[in-house]
Length: 440
Length: 177
Image 1 (cartoon, chains in turn brown, blue):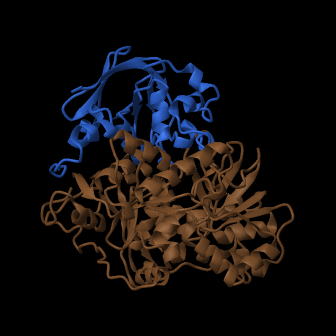
Image 2: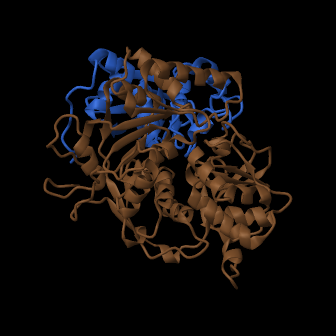
Image 3: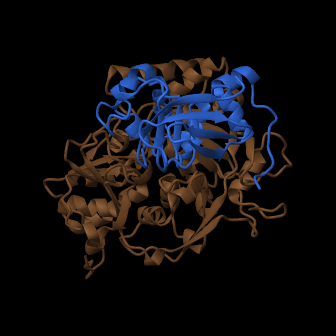
């Protein structure tokens, strides 16, 4: 319970600044409020429905077209007449209303929101897709909404929200070689009870954050939704502003939101990064939640397809880490198919100009168009019945990649690279750390 | 409409029913029309589920109902199937929100005493929904909803709400105690 004079969390600060009913007022956890929205994004998966709702709501004009972004990422490329028609609906709407549109092949909407400057520190940014939480890495309050919510923002520029409670995730220490942001995210999901986390915000704090690059922070923010949280948010630091400057070409004057020293937290979780080891999320059985265990427990599990890509595992940092393992390990296992989906065309360009693209091709990787790819089974390489996948993406529900008869394991890009080499789940430290042998 | 009164047959579901179980993403590649998609309702959970649904059936789930993707067809397909109410021990936030915005009545309550086929009645009070299990003569209180959520639900969803009001009103409530 919060009292009247208690300090505010990052989430409470940002929502207070966007509170529609008065700019000097403060809103606190538990309150139901209407807020002004800085920017909202819909994908080709959610925009067609949002357009329908917008018309049904009587909408004829976007309140603020430059703050409405649509990204064609789930059907990249569209593979049947139905999805082509959905894309055409979006194009026609865009021509009429002047919203921002990212065409097929530009990348995953969440990555475009971050790298094209649509989500800035202190902003309230929503996305009609559950992984919109990713922009929390940039000190935005960001959460997933539905298509009807999107339509309401298109019409009014505002939305109803409940101010969430916050759980502090206190990170200390530094990651050891072979352990990556994905392992931190899986550790958080493993520890937190989703019933407790539901509707709360994860606020990442502590000196362990400084050593995490922005792309790694996006993995943590992105997967906060897998822990059941409403958002995952970081404070802004030099890393944040350097990233935004590098991506947008100019230094921003956004005002970041910081938590008050006496802010009220519903819980605190301490994580010593130096104590973490590689983890794996195993395929869920009978509609249970995914089990997350030490990766070494599944060492030797045969893998048919390795998937590196999308809004969790498809950024430069992920590809660099994977290549570190590949360079030390040699040749790809002949029975494994390695599928790569870069998170954006900009990331593809960097892969090409740095020679990483050629390195992956020479290794035997297959590149897909930037976008959501096979991650959610809406396009790309859908696994066959009984196929066993190791993926650097964020979700492994049964049927997630488009086939409920395939098994999906989730692990870090390093672990994915190790499996591409050996054809089996392999502790990446066996390859990266001289003399290391994980006890199973 | 100023209040909600619903009744129907309980259809039990386990914990962690995700939105891809409710409607597979591969189906919505072809169309987002819920009247077509309803034939695939819960097919990956139980093949042929859609054919077993009767009008006014009430889904009675365990924990974390509607987890995973925020796709709103996972709500509209349920409504198109003739189901107007979902009870669960807990809901994923995005599903709960989408349900309210479409007038699918979500009741967060202790569902453990409900059995398959029980006849349930659901009605709204000032700040919460209540379930009466007519078969077992048990009253089950639902979690509170904010006035905004209740108003949207009673308007039949966000579309009805905005058609009625034109915009969000200057609206807020005191912090929960």
